[in-house]
Length: 262
Image 1 (cartoon, rainbow, N blue to C red):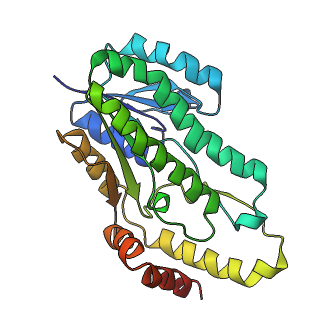
Image 2 (cartoon, one colour):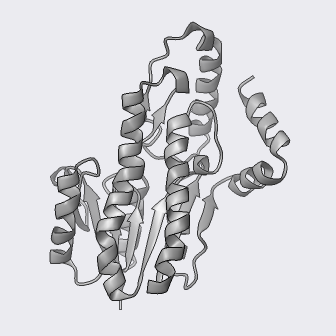
Image 3 (cartoon, one colour):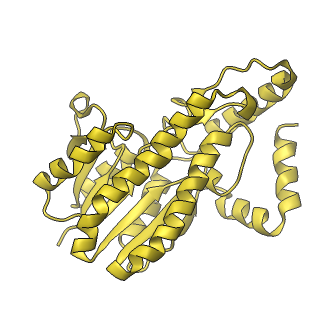
């Protein structure tokens, strides 16, 4: 029996590539978008705004009018705030958490009763390598992903009794619209002028050298097809090395970060 898979943020980026790939493989794919009528996709696209409690609360009813059971939830929707921490307005930082963390948590929680009733299911959340490390110029994005990591790290134990598997995927830079659509704070503290330029150059270099999103799509597909998926799944060039260095050679790791923006 083909699995039914829900993918948030399926109108662009990882979500769109993943949804198209799984649809071609024969899975029943349901995607979400704030404005689904704008897009022509081969899978069902339902309206969902993670920043709107009413939208989240009514979403499950719409979803289960389309499907009888949900096998996999892929939490993919989100955005990125960039900028020096001190220069980033708190209201922008709050919005980062409202979407990336609270929006993801609220949607997950509203679907959990259905998964518990089934006594089965899988939750895969697209985190980021910055949910494991803390690079400059991404303080609030990194913080939101650290929060995601912590939440699902605990949730997986609570859901084990219901045969619900929980994983996170931690990509490095990939060629999606995440970086290009990032919300960037305007630098206004002169002390950071030189540093800000160096960081922006290093960030752009990462975007220019980024891999195809197909690598992440393949990693998520493997998790869906694995009976006992791992919780943490770094994906992309040097991702495993980055995690290793931070854990076992922190001075070397910090030195490499400082050197890249010197």
